[in-house]
Length: 283
Image (cartoon, rainbow, N blue to C red; front, side, top):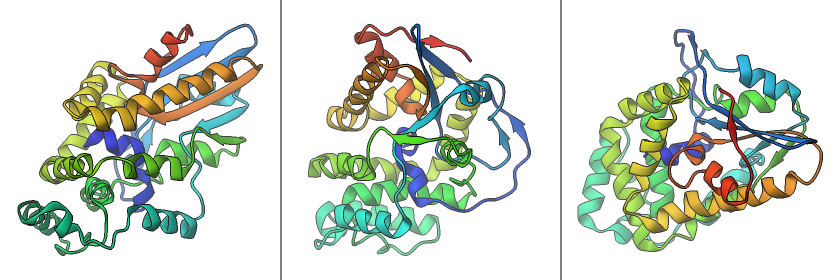
C-alpha cells in the first residue's frame, strides 16, 4: 500500500544500490503572513539513490528556513526496536489471529520474496502488514538513506517533530483487530506489484503530479473509514492545529511530511483551509 509506505516505511530499510541520476521537481507549498512562513514539502520515505530532488525552489525554501519539522525524530535504534516490539509484538501467534486462509496467502507472499513463512509470526497484524509493505522494496534496492528526511536532517538545522514514534506506531496499534487484518490483507495482495506501484508513486512525486498522488492516496484507503481516519485525516487535523498555532509566532519553518498527507480529499492543505489559512503552491 503506497500511502502507508509514505507514512512509516523508512523505519525498516537500509540498503542502497546504484541508480542513474535523475532530476526531480516535487511539489512545494507555503503558508505565510507578515512575519511567519511555513513551507510544506511532501516526502517519499524511500527513494532510489542519486535522485536529484534537493534543488531549485525546495533547496531555496529549506535554506531560508530556521527550523526543520518532520513527522517524527527517530529515537536510537535500540529504543526504536524496543518500542516496535512492545507495541507490535504478540503472545498470540499471527496465524491464530488471521486464520488459515490468510496465513497461506501470507506464506506465499513471503516465499515470493525469499523469506520463510513464519518470519512474521510474532507480530500483530498491523506490524506484519507494515513490514510486508517494505520488504519487497528493500529487495529491489530502495533505501531510506536517500530519502528526503535523512537528507534534510543531515543538513544540521534545528529539528522538531509533529509527533513521537510512539504516537505514530500507536495509531496503528489502536486500530481494531478487523482493521488490522484488513491492513495486512491489503499488504499481502500488494506484494506482486510492489515494485511497479512504488515506481509509479515516485514518478508522480518527482514530477509534482498532485492529481496522481491524490488518486493513490484516496484509492488506497477508500472503503476503510477507520484506517483513513486514524492514519490520515486525524493526523492531518492535529498537524493543521500545530501549524495554526505556529503561525502566531514569527519565523520560517520547513515542514516535511509524507506526500500522502499533502494529496487527496483529506489533505493537510484542506485541513489548513478549514482553519482559514491560505496555502499557495510554489513548485
